[in-house]
Image (cartoon, rainbow, N blue to C red; front, side):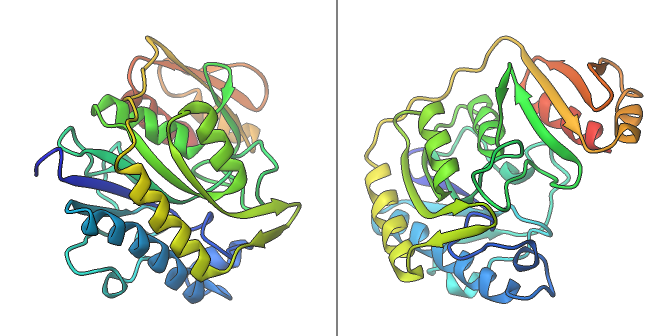
Length: 268
């Protein structure tokens, strides 16, 4: 793959238009099928922008069982990675230095924030909040650090307003598309068709935007507040993990890959 011709899409479901309750994110749940269809439509809009610009695109289904996107709803030419790869990249598995940029679709506010009724980081029933170097971190934060390790910059993100605002603070040059605003357990959504149009237009703009690869700090100090003190005891079995209080542990990593591996181990 030519670095100038292929873009990587990492897709989640909680930041997709109209998705409001956990049942809509889980197979068999009320509204799950509709959420998958809209997730597929929003990813398709991003793919269309990339393909119409003359580039190639690879999509990583990054939610739940990683089998949510309906491939037949994507434009021809879009390649889709389904299922988990047992790889430290997790939602970014498959990304390497050959890609021209990362596009995030359906991302959401992190655990420890009130930006979405579905705010979480990795596992909503295990992590209350996660900080990196003293700052609240989202899945976008961690995935962008991993992309930086591969030498790839983030160029676009869609999802709830909270994550779009947070991404803009971390990467000022990134193009964003907020498809909903959240208050309490409710979401205020733009029309699904408008969301797809907004995403396609935003990705088209992002392809010509110069975004630098993010700088990786020399040390990545990860503080994780877990949901139970039993999880803390389990986390302390791993070398290098420190206890900060009854629910919080710390680990200092040198690379984003090491950070991701230890995050998974700490969660148990």
